[in-house]
Amino acid sequence: ELKVEQNPLFLSMQEGKNYTIYCNYSTTSDRLYWYRQDPGKSLESLFVLLSNGAVKQEGRLMASLDTKARLSTLHITAAVHDLSATYFCAVGSNFGNEKLTFGTGTRLTIIP
Amino acid sequence: GAVVSQHPSWVICKSGTSVKIECRSLDFQATTMFWYRQFPKQSLMLMATSNEGSKATYEQGVEKDKFLINHASLTLSTLTVTSAHPEDSSFYICSAGRTGRGAQPQHFGDGTRLSIL
Image 1 (cartoon, rainbow over the protein chains, first blue to last red):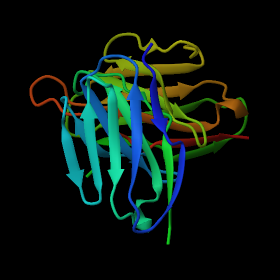
Image 2 (image 1 turned 90 degrees about the horizontal axis):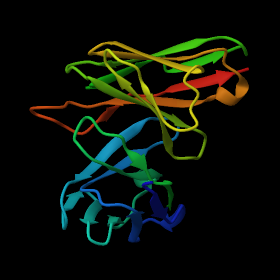
Image 3 (image 1 turned 120 degrees about the horizontal axis):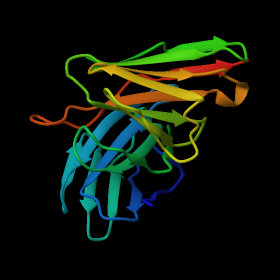
């Protein structure tokens, strides 16, 4: 059974600081997704990582994938308040027609 | 714009009522759609895979007679929570993605918040 774990579960940090969220998964997969969820809202897609060594960046967020270590990271650079949300990683296969297994989520609070 | 539309956004109803939630793919055909459930402050849990023209595949522990799924067309899947009770209160989210040529990752609906009194 595929298990996806995220660390930390909760994170409170000051604006301007850097931090990394970790996503470990238990079985081989070549598709790793990161999503953002604001309170009361659905999921917003952030990144799709498709191969070992993949790195993608959007604004202050950067995601990477190490399929050999079964590890993905989401790095936050110089955090701003607008980044406060819950972040989920998810593991799947076969674009479009795939079951996603979600991580536990990381609730991020950025303090001004 | 949204490529997966979910309706309604929020439902409040009395215990014992059956509630239907619709999930539509707006500009593509989806042979498969997925239904997730999310309790407050928790992650998303896959409930079932909705297959066009055939029976849904339910995850372990999900009652198929309680959560009826119908996928009668390539653009519409419905989830009916039958005889809902307060413990069924949750956030329900559907997803669908393009398959075949031009396949893309799944898009998620906006979710339906179900509150059973």
